[in-house]
Length: 103
View (cartoon, rainbow, N blue to C red):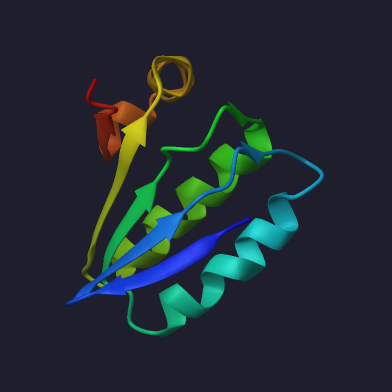
């Protein structure tokens, strides 16, 4: 389940354990208010994320584009080595800030 947490001027989106074709649309709907709310400083906390399908990558790309258009900042944090590998392989780590989980 997606959680949206406001912390000062920052908005944190906590993903659930999976973003796949079954829940991608719901995930996208869940994060829309954060973007409309002027979520120009957005962090996606992936500490619980264990699986991400291409539909999840597409949403992340769309979210990043929206935040960039709003002249905001976007980063993905607490990424597991498995998810980081997917993000690196697809080139996401080249154009967005991705921080791996700290031990």
